[in-house]
Image 1 (cartoon, helix red, strand yellow):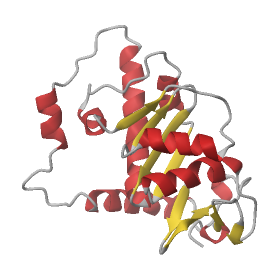
Image 2 (cartoon, rainbow, N blue to C red):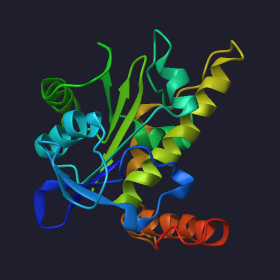
Image 3 (spheres, rainbow, N blue to C red):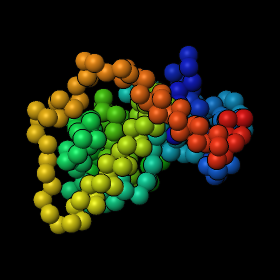
Image 4 (tube, rainbow, N blue to C red):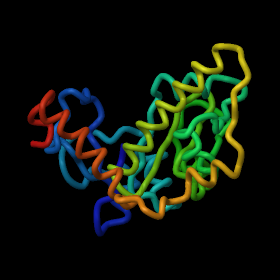
Length: 214
């Protein structure tokens, strides 16, 4: 994952390559630029962060970019037809929000590949990368993480439903629009929900992995 440094659109926060997530701490974060130069902190910038993440930040304006090869999303992207379908309420939230990169060309290690991907992404917050994984972006860590978390749950449900061999019951456009529309009497704003979700996840880390925020 990478995060744009507040006030510096051409600088990005990242963890140094080689750390396991269980040992990563806030103090390990480093700052780099699109040239791959470490500006603050210690460690090596992984090549894909320089070649893929940095151009996506620059071209799309995304503040946060997360890329994973998580199991269920990858399983769906290994299929010839890897399209996410609106067959559940949660899946409906992603309808119309996914870009699809159907051309896997191997390990991404050039700025040109990052720029190609950024233009393909456009304003879509989710990108399905066939034979590879997923990329999710957003305006905050909380928003982006929640998207990524829910996306994996939706992909898991779709793969499991498809494994039955039965036809999926897809929601119609009218229902999808109703699901995506903000509720008039909602007690929580759109930004408040991701913040509360992320705060809850951090409380779990406070209990299970104390010291991660040091």
